[in-house]
Image (cartoon, rainbow, N blue to C red; front, side, top):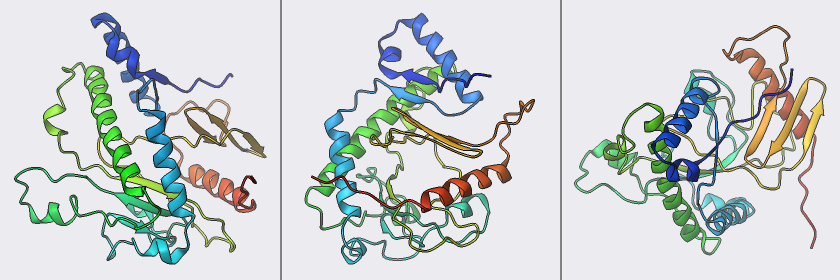
Amino acid sequence: MAAEAFPVISLNEFETADSAGKKLLALEVDAICRTSGFLAIADHGVPQGTIKRAWDAAAAFFDQPVDVKQAAKAPRPGYPYGYLGPNTEALAASRGVATPPDLKESFNGGPLDVPPGMTDAEALAFCYAPTIWPAAPQGFREAWETYYRAMEDLAARIMQLFAAALTLPEDYFAGVIDHPVSALRALNYPEQIEAPKPGQLRAGAHSDYGSLTILLPQPEVQYALLAGDLYMFSRSDGIVLGGTHEEGVWSLEPDLVRKQQILAGHQALFDGFRRCRASA
């Protein structure tokens, strides 16, 4: 059986369509969200320069010595924004699963503005807590904030599409997402020199919270991989990762045990690689 094409929706096509055209695209999005729950957004209008500056700034940050990165670390366990080094966070805990800490490192930034009149102490201490900005590389904060603003705008436009998919007015969500508690995260997966502990992953299996998650695909990932029952191949809009192909099994319910086996298999495979840099 041929692989089903990954769903791609043109945001510009939706925004410029007439009423009938918008309804057709909304029905398509509704069907996608009832099945896979994943879709790629094309023609989103975010300037490539904005994306590249943010990507380059994040890469330059992670390439710095550990002590430089640690200067921007979250000040205490559970603080939401700033640098988190490897073995700090265990994402699987969000699903009630106990695992060793993740092997990734991340920089996390929160909302750039506090809503006018916000006085809730808990919200101010967590949701709207200040981001711990790094002193280097130069231009990091500017690139990050520009990209954050672009993602805020994109998220609001995608929510208009989702509203239409729910047969609601396009501006239905506008009044409750005008000051979203959105986090922007950059992740890096350092080279591993030791074998992971049992159950330890680069980033543990987890469920995201909130209305939506926008993922930026890694542009230089342009290869396919087949290794026994494992496979991975890239697209311009993301990466398809898998490893199950059970004949006659049509259920859409995920097999969590098999999922962990797939992730562990890919991790073991890539842990055998060594990080390479292009020479000038």
